[in-house]
Amino acid sequence: MEVYPLGYGRYQRNASISAVGRETAQPEPGSTTTTHVEGFKAGATETYPMVELKISVPRELEVLERVMDAVIWAHHYEEPVIFLREDWASRAAYDPRSDNPNRWWNDGRGLPERLE
Image (cartoon, rainbow, N blue to C red; front, side):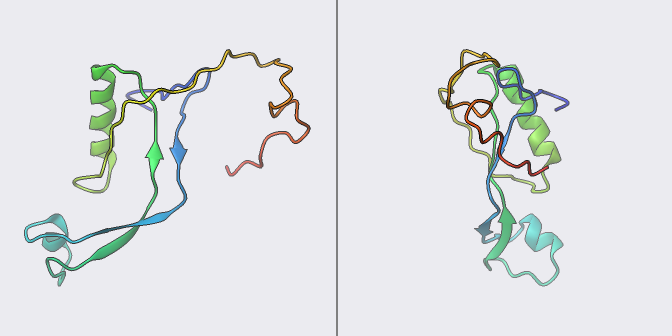
């Protein structure tokens, strides 16, 4: 958040985080794992928990560079797996008083239960 607020419409700090999954790798000789994990044999498979994080930034190289630098700096891997895609994203005609019956404030169910 220090380099870009991750704004999406009238909301800030927007991100999508997947359920915990697994990622695997086979570190080669001279990798960080074989250097720092005593007894680890190069080529052996290691598996760790992971989540997929999705964020949206504007198509501005300066913003992308700041965000990528911050992610790489903060990530605990020396080489995090980061996929960049250029996608079209939805944008609504924002109206917090919309009478659309499908909106959470009109459908009688309200918001889903908060996780945090």
